[in-house]
Image (cartoon, rainbow, N blue to C red; front, side, top):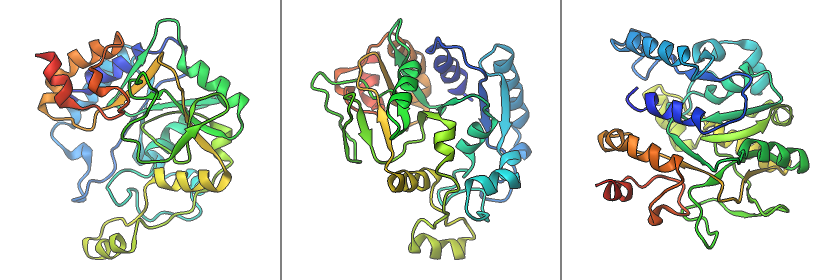
Length: 289
């Protein structure tokens, strides 16, 4: 809650296009100890918090994962067999992103994790650019803004996955990243249902003793089907729209949030952050002092 109150309005504010709907996906599935989130003391506070954001138009509806994860029709549509677990081996919900896709009715769907920052230059619309790219290049499945603030030499740093330039000079990856993406829903549905696999034999053995899920991540399942189908994830090669992911949600992050949001919204970033998608909190902290 300490950062959602600031990041969700930021994400919406950075986009000028008219969304048919804006849905907040909420994880109310059982926790690792078997308890439920709505049993926690802060659940009512969180519900009131969501109601306030909804009242101010930050989103138009809420989708709870307990509804999606128990919907047999949705499960049959997305997986070749019933998962048996509602979370993957990391504890992340299998249907977290599926929920957004299923509650959407529009041709195109946009997703953002709640710890992502977005810059968009005045007059530029990365979603419109992305939709045009999806219409022009049938081998593109997902589109996203530039991964991190761009460097002058155009190099992407800290990218462990192989990437290359596509026909329109955008960056192409053969794997999927779920933190932010634009997708044409029918094109995605052509890959379904996804095969369910375990993450590894070691994780499977550990799961037997810990009674936890051994399932591979949804992101990895999608990546495998993308590769089989010869499809790509594209990042726009432009200085007019870029995104940053914040892996650290600690006290320093919360304290720096107003500075981070103001900076990103006007397109400013430390030179050391250029070309890197994950936000380096230490670098930003130095500039905020």
